[in-house]
Length: 621
Image (cartoon, rainbow, N blue to C red):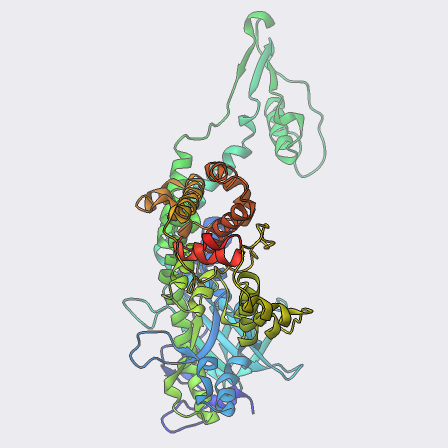
């Protein structure tokens, strides 16, 4: 049995068969259907005329319609205190049986053929709520295919016939495609934006915008009439002593030459320029003859109708009035010339929360009360009043780039992995599983810690010839000086923040050597901070004015491709003070690069642990 039959089934205190259900929870009889369905008001018909002829109006209405089409409908459990949106069914965990989940989702999957059909359904509903202020959702079994079909119809597409027992619906297939449906065999839901004075009447922004819309129409007509004027192009030139042009030839047809040759010549010239914009008549003046010689009597009269200088300001003023009156952000029509990139995201977010979400709430409330809950009751869903059809606008919202702040908070343990991924634009499904996390940790230990490398390689399944004997020999003999060979380390992978070794067992040397290395790192980070600030905007530099320059990389992320340019001359004094320390030079440079890419603060312990893992000199550790 189809869901619509289930949700229209007779129940005690519920809707009776053969009645249409309104979005405001009012149930009407057949006689009421006849008095409501198909009754349009004059301003609604005029609104459609404005929608087709005023491009500013169509642009604003379609902005909202396109936004609604990108929202996603879902079924969720209502928050008891109303402090948050309903929680989706798929986020309920194992508390619900698969059968209950299937019953909850069945009406949503059947509505408008699923997610793709629901997108177009929301788009048309938005247009109807903004122009005539009301819309009809009609569900019926297609007589050809037998499948359930859903249509979003304007008031002009649904009419009452047969004394209120049937309705005639205009199908979108063609102008002649119509179908008559019995109220007993279809689902008819009326959605409207209630009038503030009389709630049973529909309302839309068009009612208050008729004057500025007519003003835009009149200004546009004035511009077109001025452009089409023949006298605007060339004018009249007086060149001889007889007021007569060359004699035109009489012709047959619906527009014969006028009996007055001068008038006929003017009419012919005007018509030629209008019929063909490329005609010479649009540019060459009409020549007439006047008494007197050509030398002292040649004159040219320009009859061009100049465009009024106040025309453009008037059109801009009317456009602003329309932009303010529509249920859209004014910037959607007037442009964002006065909005910079720092506040552009706020305008977009405000447009969603103040214009799109209230309309989505109206639609979802109508769907929940008039379609979903009756269907859930018929399907045996327990406590259907605790569930609702709701919307998700996460694909529409834009937020400023908070990735650097999120990276810093995540490194300090202030936010979770899921929150960090969300700020980066990823989902929890992109997180590595436990096996992948273990493998990455072992790879990090194998590449950064010489003491733990053999055990890490063995855990990874990598066996090197003679590694056990070499490890035992190294443990038995006394420490010796390690050869100063530049460590063969790879650049950090850019796809993930490079990890720094933890110097839990590193021995800090507060002598001159560690002080020299610490100073070299701070100077390199300070140079990098100045470079990053020079690429940031003025507003961003003001926000970071209190941050020490060697810690700017913790707030402004660096790109790996820019590191060579950033650190080009950062170690000049350091290299001059420590000649022949190629291993030490390479280790310090790698340490600084890891700090820049990870956005981590410099610490002497981290530096000591890194130098110890590099194996340059035990004294440096």
